[in-house]
Length: 425
Length: 161
Image (cartoon, rainbow over all chains, first blue to last red; front, side):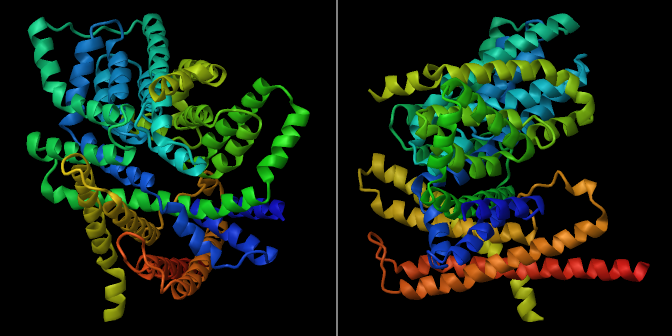
């Protein structure tokens, strides 16, 4: 019976039925044929699946990200990064990565990051003589730090799907996110040396002080969001709404980069993205309920334990599945389809669910700049006006860097688990 | 014609915008009341959840209005237009079936829960559940419209030949 559910679901997906409906319909077919549960369970589960206070963080983080991305705030963050790392050889590449890390501490999405940072830095880098392929690669790969460093929308979805504390997941992503940033900076430093990219200008002390002071207001968002969550003062949802209020005040009243009349449009965009995600979460709740009730994870887990008893090999297998999922699907559907199947198996074979959350997000993050489907890759290629094929050469060193990061995150659980254990005790 | 106008104009958009604005305000009040006024948060939390459910399901219907729910589109360019139109027709039929079934089942859900009352706000749960039939009603409507457009495309291709 359960195989039929999976086959029907696969057919729907290949026939280009939207993921949310494919999940709901295949579950519906299963319900009708198994005759074990009444159909009324479908709306009931869909409702129950999104009836959760932590999920509210998602529309708030999306909206805060949209307010942050419109001028004002992002330019000031770029200036701060410029002062910090711009003067080194290949300076603008470091600026790109550092500002992605700063942005990561404010918003929870990678594509918003790519478009707002990329639209400023990609033209600037090209003008300074950086090759297009390298420029696109550094923008798209560093943007994925946005979903590893807290806050992170995919971590919220993972937490809801697997019933894990979202605060803990956020904290677990902090060190891996910083590490990915450092590894990407080493990678781009190496390439900058080889291709002889220019250094930026150095700033006088006076200018440095002025620019950093100017960036204090946007940087304070990081304190509000991260500080609030890490020290347990607010829940992730409350931190998200505070980010909305703060970025609203900054962009509407302080920098005036958003007009009051722009707000309905920005809110509508948020409502649409949120509606898309929540319908998927709702129908995935039915789907994953069926899968767990049929003890599928246990069966696959037992099979895996019999065939590959080695835990390291098993982790490698999970990585491969997630990398594939992230390459062919957008991040959220990949997460919603694969996590309810993979994570229980991982738990069954003895992998910590918080650690597995970080592993999953890093894997699916790599999918964001991997063809054929990679949102960050598309966005940055279209800003740079270069085809995906021409950009691939620039990506190769960054794939190597991300792969090293992935291996470190996968095989050193302490990178993810040390900080949460420290703060919770 | 007036009915059609009402269904396709911005009613859904405005209701969801208002609900989303209310959701933001309510959650801000929650943060304030917890840290400034030291009040319990159970009421705002429950109402926030309900508003969020409304915003989400209305938003899902609005996404269907533009037909922009995420799908696997890497195969799309590689197929002939004829296959694509046939697939489109299949996709919208599938969406229609799902929406109609959820529509009728959610009415049964509402009937079964008329006496159920939310623990904190004392709001009848039927009111909260009402978003399910509303959302799926609009989804069915929009999928029928896209089916109609797909059929029109097929007919036009025939005439061209």
